[in-house]
Structure formats: C-alpha cells, structure tokens
Image 1 (cartoon, rainbow, N blue to C red):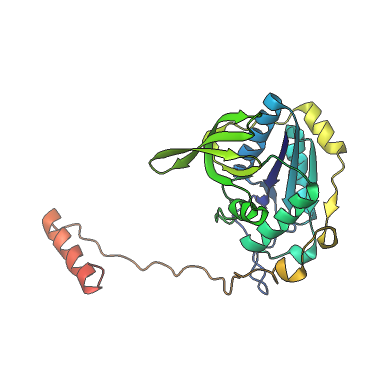
Image 2 (tube, one colour):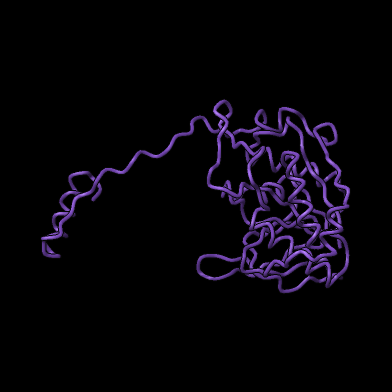
Length: 264
C-alpha cells in the first residue's frame, strides 16, 4: 500500500504578522508546529501501514523552515518526506495550494490513499484536501472519524464520515483521499530511534521547475481569492444594564430596543 500524507507547518503563536503589501501571513522566523489536525492523518497512515504493509510519504508545501515539520513526522514513523518550496508558490490560496500539491502527488507516482487533516489551524477553510481530490479526479471522504475496513482484494475502504447528528457510512474505491478528525485516533509520540532517523533523513526539495504547473496557476498570481484588506475588528461599545428591572420588564426593554434596530 502506498500512502501519501499532506501536512502543513502552522504558526505556534497568536502573534501572527501580516505582510502589508501582499496581505499574507509572514511565516519566516515565526515559531511553528505541525498542524495538529494533520497529526491524526499521519497516525492513521502509520496504523494502516502497520496492518497492511507499504510506505508512507509525507509532503508539505511551504518555506524552507517547513522541513522541520517533515522531520517531526519522520520521527513518528513516516518513511520519506518531500518539501514543496519555491518563492513562486508563496501567497497561494486554497485553490492554488491544492493545484500545486496535486501536481506533486502526480510526480510521486502511484498511490492508494491520500490523507490530510480536516483543516489547517491557521486558515480553517477545510478546502485543500477536497481540492486535491478534485484536481486528481479521485473519490474523497471528509471528516473521517473511523476506518471500518480496508479490503485489499476489492481495493475498497469503508469508513465513517462524521456529521453534526451522527455519521455516514461510506465505501470508496482506491485510490481515494480522506480528511481526518481528532476522533479517529491518538497520534503517537516520536521514538528515540525515529528522532535519529529524522535527523539524518534526506528531504528533497521540489520547486516550480520540478512540477508540471504553470506560473499563472500557482502562488499569489494563481489564486482566484486574495485578501484585499486586513484590519482589527471595531472595539465593542459599552452595553446597557437593566439590573434593577424585573425579568419580564427587562425582556420587554430588550425586545423593544432590538425592534428599533430592525433586528426583530
């Protein structure tokens, strides 16, 4: 079995800086971690590999420092890792990111299951995983909370996709893509041997010239959505207190004020 896990390095701080010219996050020099949701995808790939055999490849798109995130997942047990990094990829929105990652997966070659976290902690869009599946034209299941069965002969996977009021049981043919939630498993800690392996691992870097993409389809230039303006929310005005009013009277006052503002 050939598993591909897409991970992202995200800022490990609330002190996020924004480039005033491009309105994109400044990632260089900012303390960073592996996106927590991606660790569940890594763990599930390792569980499936231990049960069915095969190889787990992790890929990440980001600045050179994203190599640290790849070394961390190697220390967990990932077999190899590839960094997708080029200044021409900078500023990509979810569409351009999905397009670039899909091109990288095509370059890797044959695969059976692609796993991603449900969303990135810094963007919260939950769009990149499904976008990759669309660009590769493969079936997908999102918010997967449990893998029930992987049938090697039929080349199908049965799993549970989490929804607000329960779960949907799905069966997908391979190859496919799944996005994972924290209910799926508990990510393992790196072992000492894993850390030594990660320290010595060679991580190739693929840039623009290594992928079959066009400059108009990647990075900021290839992003159909862009942040036009960044500003803090307006400070909240001081509210009114009705401490001396009876509950029924206070409710009427509030209802009247909401009606005046056209909110009721």
